[in-house]
Picture 1 (cartoon, helix red, strand yellow):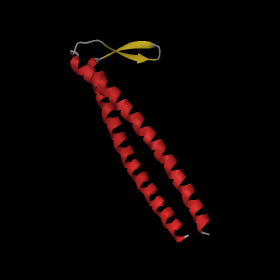
Picture 2 (cartoon, helix red, strand yellow):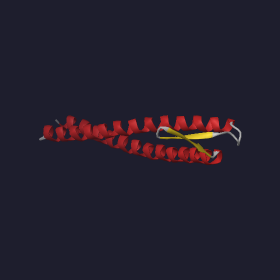
Picture 3 (cartoon, helix red, strand yellow):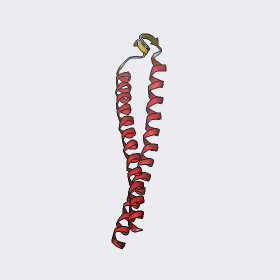
Picture 4 (cartoon, one colour):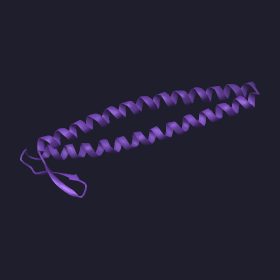
Length: 112
């Protein structure tokens, strides 16, 4: 019976570990997006207000107002940061869950 419980716990651990890895991938992707947008923000800060900005829409470059483009990048950075915070919370939850399951597995192995 203990081996059956151990197998169930190992399956549960594998499930949590898979979810954890997916969230880590998400976190890395968000960090990459944040870095790219911060680079754009840095470039915008070095430009003058009358600089010509173009937005790529499909295969076409469309002129965009400088202040509108700057606000869009600022909002995107704010959104990405909030997503990173949300993913960080999820990572902590999954790590805690994983640790609890690992402790249960160790306890089951000691009983055997």
